[in-house]
Image (cartoon, rainbow, N blue to C red; front, top):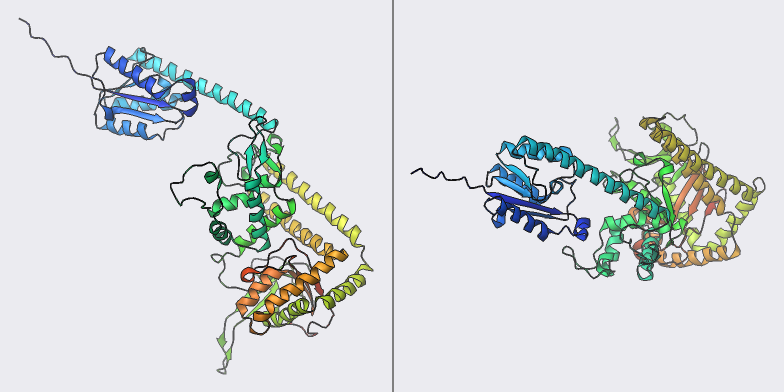
Length: 560
C-alpha cells in the first residue's frame, strides 16, 4: 500500500486597508476581511491568527508609512506566514513601482501575495506576476484620474469663493453657500488678540499667558471635543502666531499661492501669480491693525533675548537726518590707560558706514552720538511732553507752520502714497521675473531686500507727515492722553527711573528719532486710553508726534 504524502500547510496572513473616502463608497474593513478569509479557505490555506490580520484604517494608497503594513513586513522577515491575501492589489499601493518593490521584497523572504477579488494575480508564478504589473498600473492610473477630477472640483469651488476644509477661528462655514461667515463669539477674541498684541507691544509668550489666564475657549473646545493634552482653553503660541500673521482676518485669502502650503511660508516657494485664486471673505480686523501686527512680529523677532547680546536704549530707533540712513548701536569696553587710569565702557550710535561689512559712504552727521547724552536730553524731553502737553502741542504747531511754508504736506503725502504703490508693483514684477527663471535666487533676495528697505523708509515718512495734518479732536486726545500717562508714570519714573525702566518706557512711547547735529525730531506714540499694565500702554493707534528742534529742550552742543 502506497504511503500518503503529507501536503504542506500554507500559513496565511491578510492585509486590509481603507481610506476615509473609500469607507463612504462601501469598501469597509469588515467586508474586505471576510472576503480575504473566504478566499484563504477556498485555497485550502490555514486561516490567519488574529495577530496576522493587519488593518490600516484611514490611510491612502500612496502613503507607505502605515503602522499595520510595517508590522506585516516585520513579521514576514521572521517568516511567521507563507502567503499574504489582499482584497485587491490596490490595497497594497496605488503606485506600480511601490507594489512591485514590495512583492519583490516579500519574495526574498519566501512570502507570496494573492488577491481575493483578482485570483489571477499570484506572485508565485510568471503569469500571476505579469497580471500583478497590469493591475498595479491600472490602480495607479485610477488614482491619477481620481486626483485630477478632485483637483478640478476643488479649483471650481475655489473660484466660486467656497471654503475648503474646517473653518478657522473666528469663522464658521455656511452649510448652504459653503462660504465663511463671522462667528461673533470667536471674532471678538480675535480683535482682542490684535489689540493686545499691537497696542501693548507684547511678545507671543506674553499674549499666550494673558489668553490662557482668561480661559478663552479654542476652536477645538467649541466643537465639544476633549483634548488629551494641555486641557481645555489652552492656547499654544504657534496658534496665536498663525492668527496674527494670517491675511484671512483682513478679509483676503489666496488659494494655490504656494507650491507646498503645509510648509513654512516662503516667497521662494510661490506659484506663478496667474495660478493664484483670491477670494473675498468677511474681515474681522482692519488693514492697519494687521500691518501693525506684522511689524510687531518682526520687531519681536529682531529684539528676541536669544538674538540680543547687549541691550541699548535707542536700538533700531535712530536715523540720520542728513543721509537718511539707520544708525547702529556700538559698545566700547572699559580699559586701563598707560598712565594707570581706567576708561569706563560706553555705548554710542553711528551710521552703518562704520560697520565692517558696509559699502556706504561716510556721513559726517552720524559719526557718533553718546548714549548717555542722548538719554539725558530725550528723557527730559519726554517728561516735559507728558507733564506739559499743551505747551508742547503749541511748540509742535509753530514747528509745523514754519516747515509748511516750504512744503505742501497734502501734495507731498499724495506723492509718497504713489511711490508706495509703485514699490509694491516693482516687488510683484521682481517676483514674477524670479518665478519665470530669469533671475537667480541670490540676486532676487538682494533686490527684494533693497525694495523692503525703501518701503520701510516711505512708510515711516508717510506716518511722520500724517502727524502734521491733525484735527482739533486729535490734538485734544493727545493732551488728555499725555496727562493721564504722566500721572501714572510720575510716581515711579520722575526721579527714580532705572536704565531698564527708561528702556521700557522709550521702547513703548518712541517710534523713531531723527538726529541732525544738535537737533532731534522724536516721533512718539501716545495711547488714546492711558492704560499701562506693567509699563505697556494700551494703544488704539499711533496718535502723536512730538517734534523737538531748536526749541530749548536740547543742548546746543554736539552730543558726542
